[in-house]
Length: 288
Image 1 (cartoon, rainbow, N blue to C red):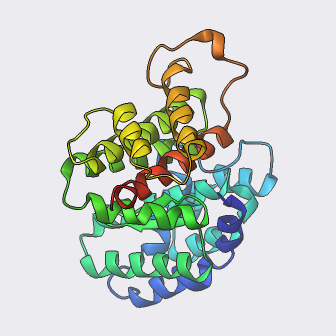
Image 2 (cartoon, rainbow, N blue to C red):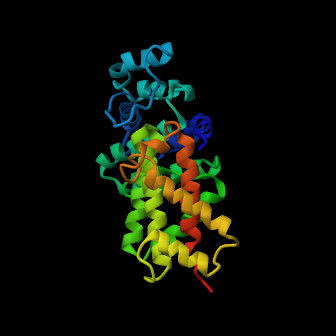
Image 3 (cartoon, helix red, strand yellow):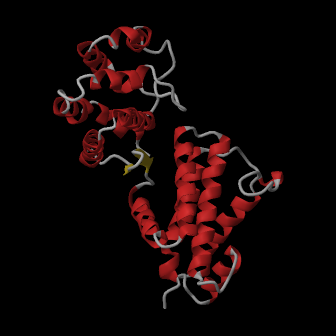
C-alpha cells in the first residue's frame, strides 16, 4: 500500500474536493466548511487520524483552538487550509477521514450533496491513482491490493455476484483487511490471513462444483487433473494453507513450535497474494 501517495494527494483536496463542494452548495449549506472541520477536529472515531500531541505545534494549536474555528465559515476554511499532509498518522488515516466526512454529510439529508461529494472523492482517487476502491452507501474507501492483484480481486466480485456464500466471504475479507491496514496488530494481521485463507477455501471448493467439500481434497483434484503447470506450483497454495492452519491463532490454536517470529504487515500481504491469486484463478483452473 502506498500511504505516501494518499498523503501527497491531500495537498490537492482543497482545489479538487473542498472548494468545488463549498461553491456548489454555498446557498443551501453555507456551514459545510464548519461541518468538515468539526469532523476533523472534534468528532470521535474508532481510529485516531492525526499524529500524537507534541509532534507539531501547528497541529496542537488547531486541536486546542478547535471551538474557535467552528465559529464561522471563514474560520473553518482557515483551519482547513492549515491541515498539512504530515499531520496525519498515515495515508490510510486520510481515507478514514474522507469516509467519516461522508457520514457527517448524511445528516444534511441531501442526496445531491452526497452524490457530489462521492463524485469528487472518486475523481481524486482516479486522478492520483490512489490505491483505494470507493464503496457507496455508506461511502467507504477500501484499501486495494497492489497492482494486478487488485485486478484479480475484481474478478472475484464478478464470480461471487450470484453466490451469497462467496459474497459474504469477500465482505469478511475486505473488512478484516481494512482493520489490518488501519491497525497492523497481531490480532488484525491474523484475521486478515485467516479470512484470505477462508476465501480461498470457499472459491476452490466452489470451483470443484461440489465434487469435493474441503480445501485439500478440492486442491488435490485440481492437481490430479493437471490444472496447474506443475506440482511445485500447487504446493505453494497447499503450504500456505497449512501455514494458516498451524500458525497459532490464525485459524486454529495451532502449534507454537512452528513460530519463528511474530507476524508482520508484509506477512499478511504475502498470504493475501497467494490466497487471492488462487481464489481469482480457481474457476478458470477448473475449466477444460
